[in-house]
Image (cartoon, one colour):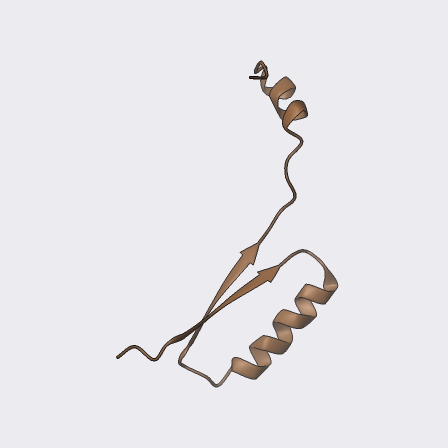
Length: 59
C-alpha cells in the first residue's frame, strides 16, 4: 500500500509565495512520505503581439 502523500503547491514570482514555500519546506523537512510538486502559473501571453512578431495571420 502506497502511503505517500502528495501536495500540489502553486507559486508565482512574489515574495509571499517564496515565504509560504519556505514555511512549507520547514514543516515537511523531516517527512519522507510527502511528494511536493510545484506549479508556476504564468499570465496568458499577448497572442496578437506574438502572432504579428512571428508573421502569423490570425485565425
